[in-house]
Structure formats: structure tokens, C-alpha cells
Amino acid sequence: MLFDLFLIRHGQPVHNPTIPYHTPPGPDLSERGRAEARQVAAFLADKAVEHLLVSPFARTTQTAEVLVDALGLPVTFTRLVQEHAPGETFEHVRERVREVLAGLADSPYRRVGIVTHGSPIRAFLLELSHDQIDLRGHVYAGGNPAPTCGVWHVKFDHQHACQFVLAFKPV
Image (cartoon, rainbow, N blue to C red):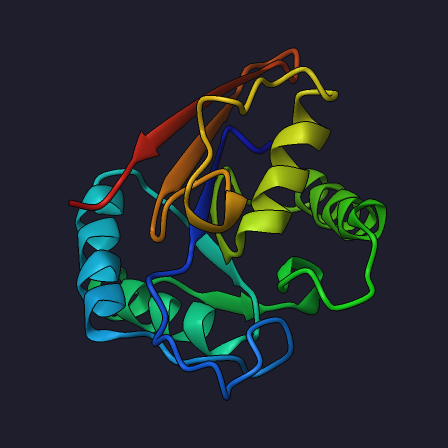
């Protein structure tokens, strides 16, 4: 049974207008992004995360590499948590998120981290809250619901109710 879900936005990428942001591989992580990822690793060190699901984009895989090096976590790369693609509807992103959540419900993991992007994080939060979460106080660069390397902690109780906290923001 899943008890804790950590929705981790990738670290700050290199800003290069010649590299498409929304199609793989996208930009690499910047040095600041790597520093942010090290901060997330320190934050997660005592959270007993058992597994990471990671978007296959460069900025998410490089964020995950820092976490894996620090925490020794097993990783599954999945397009289900990748960036919102050009021409893709938000409802399709939510369908992908529903598929991830169904898989997690059937998994042996109790604490999972997902290294992803702003749009899938928004989809997870809306899906898990049944569209009840108020994200107006959580609008970051690009309209994202978390800053780069921000971590939303979703805590489940035995009745599958959720608590949502933006638990970490890098300095």
C-alpha cells in the first residue's frame, strides 16, 4: 500500500532557445540545477523512499542521477511522467497520471519518488485531490505548481485520503 508519494520537479535546466524544451531529450541540467538536486537528495535522505519513477528527458534523468548517487535508489524510466508534449491536451497528461497511480496501487512500494515536470505534477495533485486542491498560492516560473527541484509530499492514510504539502523548495 502506498503511504508517501514525493513529486519532484527537475532541477533548473540550461536555458538555450535552440534546444526544444517540450520534446526529448530537452535541455540538460544547469550547474544550479545539479546543486538543487543535491539539496533534494539531502531532504529525501531520511524519507525511506524505495523507488524512483523518472521522466526520460535529460533534465529529469540528470536530476535522478544525483538522487541515485546519494541515496542508492532503484529507478524506472517511464514516458508516463514525461513533459507535456506539444499538441497534447492536459486531459491526456491526466490519463497518463491515472495509469501511473493504478500501477502504484498494485505495487509493493510504500514510498515512491517521481522525478517529473510541472504539468504532470499539476495532474497528479488534481487527480489525487479530485480537483479540490487550491494551487493559486503555488505558481512558480512558467506557471508551474513547484519551483525547480520543489517536492510535493502526498501522504495517504488507510482510507486513501491524501494530505498535500509542498514540503521542499531549494535555496
